[in-house]
Image (cartoon, rainbow, N blue to C red):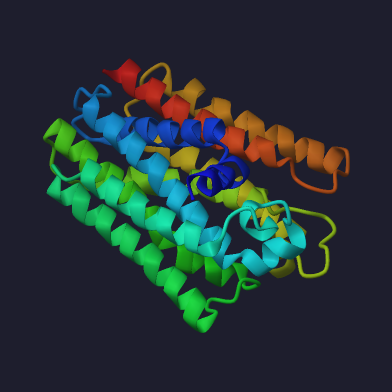
Length: 293
């Protein structure tokens, strides 16, 4: 089974970019909490941040496994090289991986009751979504907006988990700054979700928001979300000298991708650009928090 898990990780959860994403998410968003807090407490990454990063690394792997199980029929048609679709790993292997991974991340957070409770709720929610898919075939995979709505709480709870860890590390109490930081972060990830599915020509049966919102509507959502996240950050964070350049710098990536998509009449939005935008944004949040401290 270990060899099949390894094949799944290599094919569906490439270690280097996946770990980099999880760590930048944990460190960057934790830093963002400090940036938008009214009192702006001194914050530095520590053991708690490392634990959060490791937790996200494993949890995102488990979410990838759940998504691959849910999308098996679709992947066989459109992503046949994915390990599950290709037969390199079995569904029961992924269910076992989820069970082992869940025990691991809960054990990592055993010393923080609030974070543990949020994380347990997130894992339970993912399990319920998978159970609904296997038992009821719901929500239908081709209804992307509904599927996004159903999947959203799993991501939201991870943001809440990071906030509970941050509060435990700093000794702060929850306030509107944490909610604001989560909204800003969600808007950043909305760009990735919509941009990676932008295409001019849908293949029969292909899932894309373009089929519901149209090309212009999908591009508008993909571009409006990061702009709104920057506006919220600029109006709510401490006006330090580095705030404006570090907030605006990541926007160059979606702007360049938009230019290339329309100028060159590219068939698809450059997916790598959307991923790099999220990574660079999280890195800038971390840099801002360290500069503020």
